Image 1 (tube, one colour):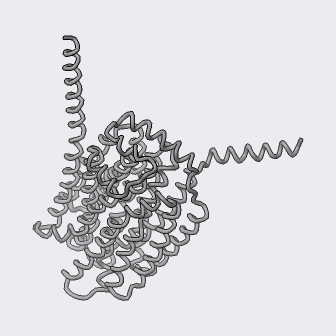
Image 2 (cartoon, rainbow, N blue to C red):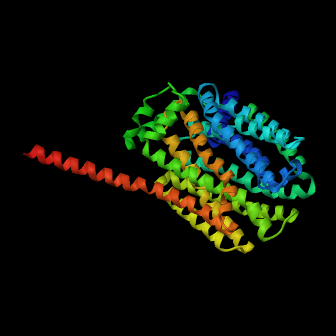
Image 3 (cartoon, rainbow, N blue to C red):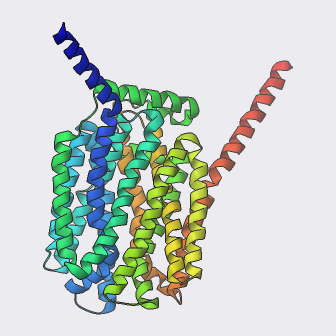
Amino acid sequence: MSKRKGTEARQSGNISASMRWPLWKRNLAVLWMGQFAVTLGLTGTTPFMLFHIERLATGSEGSIMLWTSIALAGPSVTYMLTTPLWGKLGDRVSRKWMFVRALVALGICMLGMAWAPTILVFVIFRLLQGGLGGIYDAAIAMIAVTVPPDRKGEAIGRYQQAVIAGGLTGPLIGGLAMGWIGSNMFLTAAALITLACSVLAWSVLSDPPKSRVNSVLGADQTVNEATDHKNSDEKGTGSKPNGVWASILLFSKHSEMRYLLTAGILSKCAGTALVAIYPLFIREHYTSGPSAANMIGMLEAATGIGALYGAGKWSREGDRKDPVLLILIALCLSGIVVLLQASTPAFAVLIVLKLAQGYVFSAVIPLVLRSILQHSAEGRQGVNIGTANSLLVTGQLAGSFMPQALHIFPGLLLGIGGIGILPLIGAAVVSILPIKKKYTERRIQKRYEHQTRSDVR
């Protein structure tokens, strides 16, 4: 009798524990730690890329700026080319192993960048970083098949906070490391942490049972089929993925995804351009040397604090309100905040505006990806997310070269103002959606009234 009671108690305890810490929450915790480690290492050096490359490259200032642009843009190119393929492979094989593979590859690439003897070797490892990465896509695809439908926005927001938290602490620690231990040792430490996270992911992360995948996706499909009849072709693909071109075809035909992706590209372009141009701005208007790195770190940290708060809030709102409206609001605010930065060079005010920038910019990409997941069929989450991120990276790629393009402006403040126009263009694109929806509803209503009058006659 006592043995039976003990067994029942243990079973009850196990059930209670699994209810408190279900599979999707365990996975999300591991995904969060892995993404945080990667972002910490990469963003800890990206704002100071110009200073790092000055130690490796020789030549004129224009030559160094060209190498810096290539180093910033290179990973975007290789990522754009390979991420849909990694997403497709994850759909067919295992999203867990895609995540583990990405962690190992990124850890090795960080070690390579840390100890690169020449600028060419450094750029090669930067290219490999983009081509062998895909950690974000694998994680979002796993969230799609493990998280309950009414919690997906929240889960994506929490995961996005890992990106933001890493982006917050990375520049702060990286700025200090530039003067204390050097960027080489900082990258080495970040690489070792990333490799340790790959071991954790290998031992803890779990792909969901097939029945769980079907139940989660089935609920989403029921909701989506009732709300968006235009997406029936994608839903009908079932377990027969058609590759990257099928995703591109879906995005081109689906008006909501097409407009939202366009706005996301413009937002990415603006955000990357601001990161690339601020070292030049700080050097021109304030100071140079180690103190410039500290000031850049402070500004990037302020952006991260704002984004850390905003990512969770915007994503939770996306589960309850119209994501299109939220994206429209965020894009308008993004443009205003950047234009204000161009109008006030006071450093204290810049910190406040950077806080606001992080808050409003953090809304766009998670809400765009949520829309992609919402309209993706079973077995196509990875390839759709990978293809979407590949398209979004074109904005990041364009933003990397923005500082050179902004030389047409007489001053960097006007250049920053030019960057602020990009989110406003994105807002104009997104605003077409409610207008188009209203026009379609009126057309259907008129057709219905005409058919009703015909039937009466």
